[in-house]
Length: 462
Image (cartoon, rainbow, N blue to C red; front, side, top):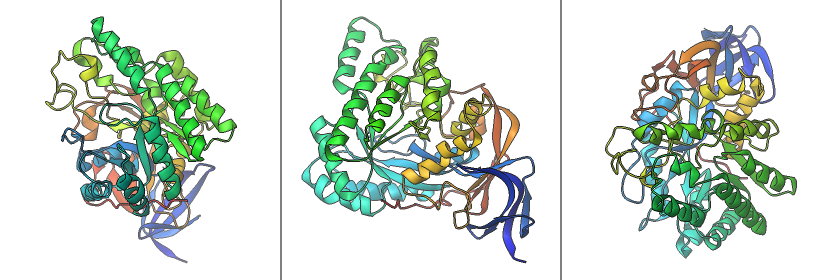
């Protein structure tokens, strides 16, 4: 009888397709066998627990350099520790494309920053300009070096591309066989609406939502998909916020457009009413696209059930509330258009989504794994090493207590970011142990994985 290095025994294994009780035999970093009565030099009893693939968060802004020279406050040590505490074992984060620096240089600089990661990571490459060197020389290089995808913005002063530039990126991506992910909002419409708000003195945080209505997201999504059709290039729509946008994606999918989509827990659990909190408090909830209404939130779930939206990410973008370079960098009397866009979400992604989806009966356990681990692994070229429980896969495993009740506080996550938008929210279902490549990395709220424990994963493009 084979004796494995580690056996996780008697847990209810959940994959994207099945649930069953069995043992998992692990040697080194890999799952070797799934069966019954397996013997191990070390055993962990998972009776009463769910055993799921480690979460893969495909949209994380970590230690990212901005055009003005600032660097996101959540560095790799802090952010990936927070991720582990919430059940995530792999993050896909963003290399910048700031002026006067080449694409390959910035990809490699960012990969070097990731040397401090506690967990495994892959890299999306942002594209903000379309000079010949970027398109013809450097996009093929970053694709060959394993970028998980290219990222394009249709809004923001320092990032947005015109339609013509977007088409150039789509053509270059097609040549290099790499996916393009898109932040879809109409830049000119938003500028127009912000100007009108400021002229009318509507400077409070809720103006962020009313200056970026669903229509500007819906229009840009339709336009992005139309351009992808022109060059037959696969795209992904990031952070879908409302059913109006999801319906556009559904129609495109039905006519054969190569488009997939993700959303985030905050669009399924928070509403724009949070932006109306007194004083500066509402700025905690400024993100783009903005939070929507309760009715729009309710309408999102059908698109998760039918697969139109196939990934749950955090869009983690942490800015401190009390810090001098975070939400208040322009002062606490600044109008909404000057507040940095983004909310922290790495640690809360899986528990908040689990509670909202599973405890309500909206989704099945297999859907939870599909959305948080398996589809992201496939989308970003990490499968089957990541995102599933099968012989030959990395032993990235969560032991999840479906009955543990936790009241979320920011103190749980030991983060550089000083708030969570879910402060005081009670959820049922929480990770109690996390294994990364066969090694216990988190145990009942204690971080065991040291900075530098993570590995860069080169995406395999189709």
